[in-house]
Image: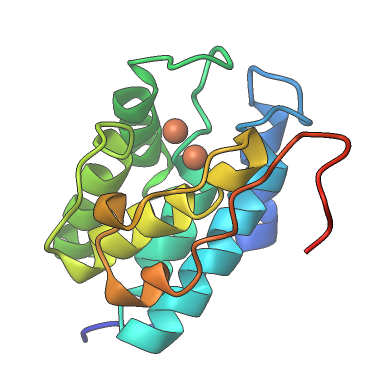
Length: 164
Ligand SMILES: [Fe+2]
Ligand SMILES: [Fe+2]
């Protein structure tokens, strides 16, 4: 059934992934980021009808195989391969949903937008957290209208910046 919530031990899955994460847990691309992606993603999915199970799995897996804090060009494909390994052990989803999850993870760092609601929601949730590295996502890099409402204000780092 479309958008049926799948019963997954998310707490156990998060612990397993965190304990196998190559970077420090306080990484820019680590669990605190994953949690914000999950929160953004669930909020967007509740508004636009994207598949919440895929969105939540994307959040915890998409950056789990990063090996450095730079661009790490291979981390999307490594993350997607990780999702393949986790499937059947930590979660069971049908092929149609898994193909969405796989593509969302594999291509999330390619700088594209998606016409698919669930993939676009995953990518938007990730990009809405770019504020952590001082970047405000531009609306043209967001796939869904819902996400455009949540673009964070641009940060300034001047110590004497006026408070407005
Ligand atoms: Fe990433
Ligand atoms: Fe990310």
